[in-house]
Image 1: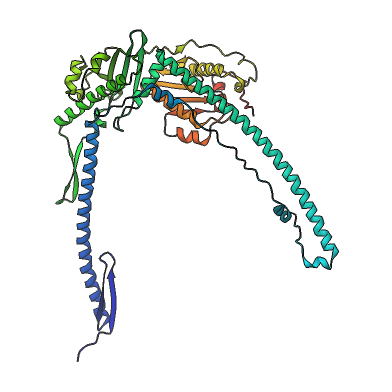
Image 2: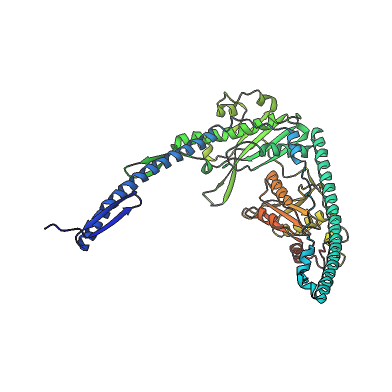
Length: 522
């Protein structure tokens, strides 16, 4: 007699996307069949996962290889694209075209219905036919609501007019400051055309900031223009070998199911790195000279520097590893598309070690002088010795000198030096501090803003841009007022210190300036 399968169940495997009905005459046999089927499916799942993993690993290796090739190509083609700028484009970029935000009040006037609800004015009903008392009460409450509505409407109108007056005052001030700033830009444009050294430096800093190089290369440079012989000196910190890509392929090894990195050999990498250094030099000089739209440059000096860790001391160090001095006429006669970069630099009488990787220092043809032509003699701000003197009422120029005086005391404690620059009142440099300490030191840009309202985030952005222009290690912004959230958000993770009015008073007290105040006028 045949056994009937009284026990049935349908099992499935979501990964494989299949189902199967299993039956058996006893529960024990059913469970045994289920376990057996699951083992079969598990083996299939493992094989499928392994297969998919290998295919995924292979695809990943191909994607990484494409990125490797793209990155290598970026460095190989550094010199291919010319980034020529014009002074008009530069000064046009400085023009403030910001439109003042339209008037918008947050005030709201209550409606008559809202006031009726607030005063519990009863609605008209049929019951009033039988009760004059109810009717009269309703009429009385409606009159009370109408009176309150007129009162609030009048108050709303008064406050709106006050807001309009304040808005128009702020708008007028904004437009006036914008006009002054744009006039200053046009004045500087004219100075550039007339050969002003400071404006020439500003323009070529802009040119160098817009040179197209791989993102990994930090633009760290300093320039100086010598008007007497129309020479531009460039000191540029070139990329360290550790910053240059060396991987040319990601290869998938199926037998080990892993991805291996294929790198340039030491010999090939040395040539690759040397070529990158040579291309960076030639591209910078080419773009600068081709952007000289006012013929301000007759000669150019390029000093390429490398920052590294001195293995003998473990300390930060730097060396000039390549220096070039040539005339504009000679350089622009070179066709960079057809040259051997190393031979080209040799032809320009460039000096460098046989292997750039050795970091063998060379003596620059000319160095940038620390004596900045913008630096002027400081002066004492008047009346600050008065008891309770309000810093917020100082003329902006006096405030800049006063801040310089404060930081001079701060930096002199450690042997530093602070120098004031020519007054500009346009977001430029107010003071530059130098600290020769090898660890905490560097070049500091200090700006002072004697404001009576919140410092806009644009002022912090301007400071950061100035830091980059100056090749500074840190920026310090000092104000009599305060900063908003946007300003602090922008400064986060950047070498920027924001000092508001209260923090300024704390510093002043620490360095012997007592009984001063900061009272913001509103």
